[in-house]
Length: 124
Image 1 (tube, helix red, strand yellow):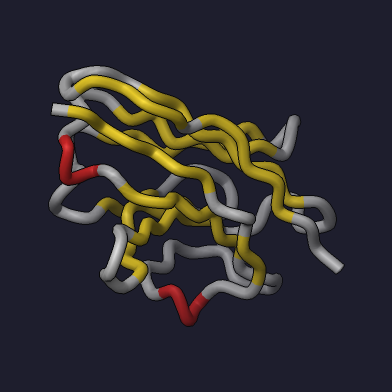
Image 2: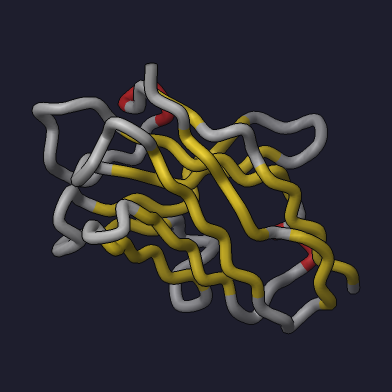
């Protein structure tokens, strides 16, 4: 069984920054992504990255503010979030796709394993 452990998140003022991290056991070098779910809304795509980090995709709402990256040597995925806005407030989830896939995926149904979620709250 794959365990996806998330860390980071918290409370920040608008314009501030936070970094989320995610580490999946048993899924080294797999495509990964971040999704978020605001209260009363569906879970939506935020960013994703290929198995080797060469390709990435972002939701329009976070382009230019968020950066997804990975360190395969440490098996850690990151989401650097800058210039945060109140509308970024949500529970953020890390997702991992099982082999043999290697590309960039933006649908939640593409992913096989999920982290526990971490709260990000941006105050105005």
